[in-house]
Image (tube, rainbow, N blue to C red):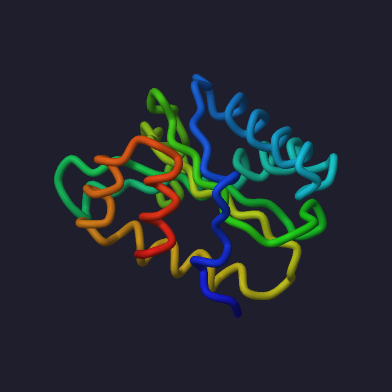
Length: 157
């Protein structure tokens, strides 16, 4: 598998002012569709999958005052490539907790996985979890604002 850092692209580091989970997934999905990275079934598939299999991750056990994250993804047949889309939310959005699906988490960042290959999704998830559960990484990410700074940080860590 290629290095996870190769899955980031400058034009896939986004900021969003969306205020709901569905709105941000639709906004990002439509952007990816415009870039021809996903199929027209992607938006509905990722929203549906997020309802059935929540991806919110509570980082409180990792360290104090860490922002929560979500890792939305969907099945390979809705994707045309392999990439990680990073989304910094202007305001936290409620996502259901991956571990306790009935619990809501306020999420600040999305690491949205686009994957057209049947294999390797667990490798990407595992590497993302390794990054997110590093307290220093998440504190440093909080300090960054521009898409360029975020891209440089994600591809170097």
